Length: 345
Image (cartoon, rainbow, N blue to C red; front, top):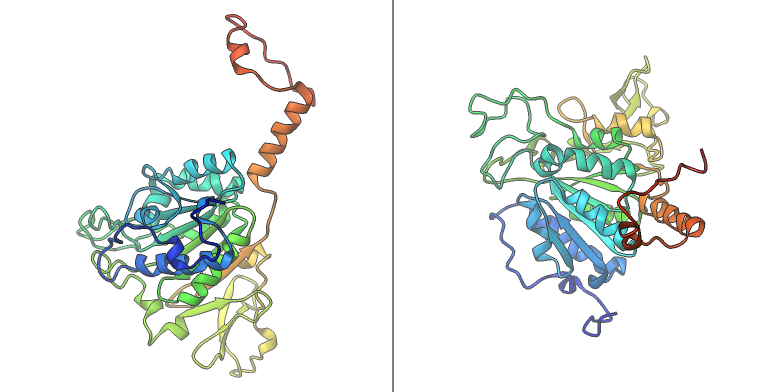
């Protein structure tokens, strides 16, 4: 432990001396504050924590954390973070990215970090726009969205982050929103406790270039009917009176919204959330207004051995089998060398 590290940590322990500079009203402020409040409760240490970001408004994050950090290049944060975790698996490594940084130029790197199950907490801020470069449409922008690069409206179909993550083989997938702080902090904790790649999509408003991107979900007058917070082992219900729920369609093809008590619908017909069920998670990840609520919380959690654990175990096996490697001796041994075959076939 560093001699100047306080015994009892608070939010202030994780606040750097840099002035936080995002646009007034940006949802990033709330996301940052929630994480700075959460980390002391997890018992983590600033000197053992690393934040890695790419390029974008969200990627200023490492400057505002009193931890180690890397502000890397566009889309490459998952690759750099993977290197950090392999070099020192004892570090707590967080990846901060956005819908543009993570799903456009960085889509390939994000996919491989998820499928490899590297022990990273990946926070993907989704505001459905490129904010840093002044409002161009992003991979998650809706069809028809107007902006500097699409004055007549986008003709691209959007990427949906959670189905993407599940399709890539992610073992932990969750969704939160910047305006609902307590559940956001709980999801941070769940993501941290998960051993493996944790993908958290955080809906976030850009008041300058895409204000109201999630009004149909986040507005106070519709939130109770448009947000369903899933809890493992609990019925998937929502609504102001908690009288709406999700059940499997009679034909077995998807999920439908029902009103409990109407048309003979009972609570027994409502689906119970099972966060270990990949099929259910996939169905929930696709839901959203106007036909259904958007589902928040942990949609899927099914841990598996981490990439760094398996890779380092393989390295140790090689040392036991062949002895310590000496790259310098190999390079000085002559102009050519022979690579032996795999003894295991």
